[in-house]
Amino acid sequence: MRCKSDKELVEALRSGDENAFECIFERHWQPLYAFVNKMIADQDQTKDVLQNTFLEVWKRKETLYADDSILPFLIKVAKNEVITLFRKDKVRLTGDEILISNLQREGLTDDKLLATELQGAIESELIKMPVNMRKCFHLSRYEQKSIKDIAAELLLSEQTVKNNISEALKRLRNGLTSNWGYLALLIPVTINLT
Image (cartoon, rainbow, N blue to C red; front, side):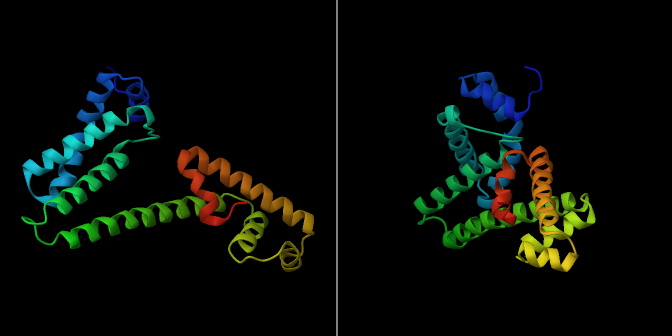
């Protein structure tokens, strides 16, 4: 099988292609193993977590989706497997509540990192815009000023302000969708692009 993207492999996997599953496994088992083993420091349990993680991938194959990489999904499933493992094994393992708390906090950190990267991408797109368009957008979305107030502050007509904001939103959606794919769906939440 030629070197396919994760997206192509997941699409093939959805139809039950075992070779696609093997490719996904071969591509991602080592980084996933390192990630899990770092948390639990037990090779046998790490192998069990990986086995359960890839078993879950196979079970969910009809509903899987990957844009660029399936690795974030694999990590999420593995984290949940580790949490389950620690909850079931309280007798032998100590500090499990701290680990669970850290794992859950790490998920929040991932979200913050994603939001930071998305905000950086938004700023990068804004820099490409003409000055008045950027100012109109900034005053509207970041300072929550009305169209009338922006028009008075920038000495523009209200219609020009509306047009600038509308065009800025259009450019942001287009620029971010081409670079972020499905993650661009987060944009309305991030900066109120409605």
